[in-house]
Every structure is written in structure tokens, then in C-alpha cells.
Image (cartoon, rainbow, N blue to C red):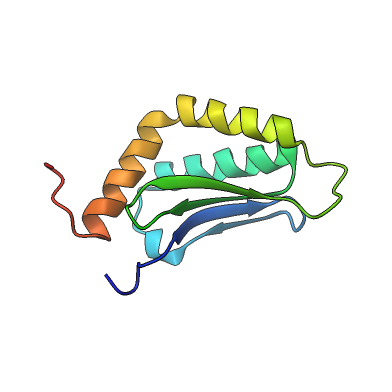
Length: 113
């Protein structure tokens, strides 16, 4: 597990550079899943600003990490937290499937556990 000891970025969206990134290690995901991730992340940064990164921790749990430039008047910190809670609820099935995918294909865990 040397390559995946720390945290692995799944995808990120950046409102400052208006860019979206999908880690090439996840190119094998189905197109509809990749599209849904892109839409979710891009709409998030469009609504609240900043940079949203979805990453896996060392246990394979998917984390939302948000950063904003210092003194960014456009970044909505409260809106950010509310929107993440909303996404974690509305996209729970997708997020759980992505965690299972990571645990099986990257960490080599048995999917039946």
C-alpha cells in the first residue's frame, strides 16, 4: 500500500482558475459517474467559490476538503458547509459507491466485508 499511504485526490474544482481535475487513476470510472462528479464539483465552486477537493483518506473514506484564498470576499463559508452537508445527503449513494470502488480496486479489500 505504499503508493496510497496518505490521501488520494479523486477530483477537484477551482473557482479561481475555473478548472476541473479528475485524477487519471480514476479514468476507468463509468462516464456517468465522472459526469456526475464534475457537475457536482463545478456547481459547488460556482455557488460558494473557493476550491473543492474530493479525496480519499488512508481508510478509503471520501472527504470533502475546501480551501479559499485569504480574504476572498466571494467565498461563502457558511454556504460551503451547508452545501457539503446537502451533497453528502443527496449524493450518499454515489459517494458510498465511490468509497467501495476505491477500497476494492485501490486498497484490495474484499467487497463482501
